[in-house]
Image (tube, rainbow, N blue to C red; front, side):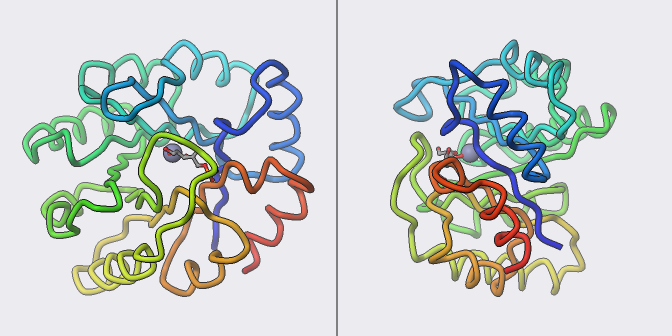
Length: 216
Ligand code: DX5
Ligand code: ZN
């Protein structure tokens, strides 16, 4: 089963209601919301009040990606805002911090996500994996939509898929950045469960593209 999580960083933000309706009609599985603090990445986007407003007008589950230097400061707010998957970056949390994050999310029935930049060694995240529901593999440097996909992602996904099998873990593998029809088949073969896509999906026929993504 493949799930599609369109990133609304590429949506028309001054007419967002229209694009949200389009996502429901096109049978997206989630709405991917990128939150950026201008420190962890060189861009600024979307806070908890924005997430809350999306929650109020869409019935799709919210897949919230925190690209923040201090995500733990804001976790409560993002839970209260209605995040269904909440993802933070391994580069900024110790394993101990992640365990308490995990506990908090579990008690609110929010899925626990962990992400990593394309140049972060996979070994760094292995100790965290038993506590993850979702592992979000960045396939571009986080910060902006419309960047070129890193080919090294295939091998990283393959290794995380293998690690999942060998260790009897059940996290979903999500890929984010530069995903389009030139790479989605191979990504699926390597073990991806959730495709995030921004600039590709919001250009052209969204419904057809999502259908194609789900049936690669
Ligand atoms: C990048 C974000 C992505 C981005 C994806 O930092 O995490 O979610 O919006 O956009 P595309 O699919 O255009 O690379
Ligand atoms: Zn993202």
